[in-house]
Length: 280
Image (cartoon, rainbow, N blue to C red; front, side, top):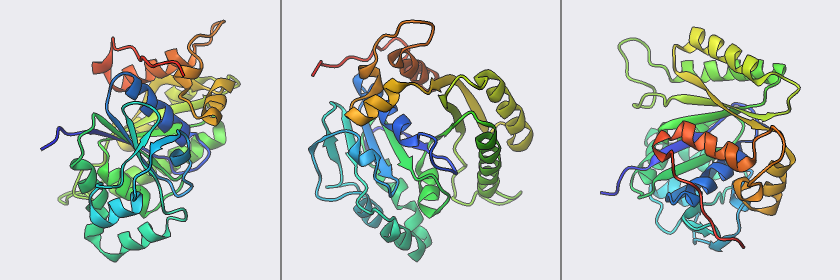
């Protein structure tokens, strides 16, 4: 049996919070830290499938993973060493959604397929909406990362949507969970901070609200991702942001420093490992 991969699901109940960029950048810095990483694009918009150029495209993609509960012939290779991807080949999400609704056992297929793989980390991007595909990703994941933009309206909507999600998966007393597995812990990541709001104040408010509502199921990460030009530039160029901005003048941390800080907070066992890559 292969060693168990650590599976992260990147989710949010609304769009426009930077899930795909976070997923792409996290996976790439892990790969440059000599970790074997698989990306899974479970968002019908297919944005993650287009971030990094492919060196090899597999005959099949995500639809076949769901249908067969197996990732054979579904894993493509990106141009970044150690980083593979299952591309999304269901642009409307209709085929996968229909398949998942045909049988309750189909809900487990993504989980089964990923459990058979031999990677250090698997990161799954999702669509910015509730739905059965997102729920199958939650079932498959060990940890959920949920980005949020630090704005008042976004924060209120995020709180409501996340609390609703936790309560939906919380089993009633005396019953097993809806999925047969406990809801993974949720790590909230403040993303696209534009410095017009106080990130620490928003983080503390979120911690207080979640502690009252969901009793430790949700925690807020200390690392904050700023809204800076290098992040959008790197995404457009198809390169990881930590490679694009290695150093930065002034008090703001470089993208390399910020992404490494995030990795070390999520995975303390990687402390001391520096990302390395060949210049192109």
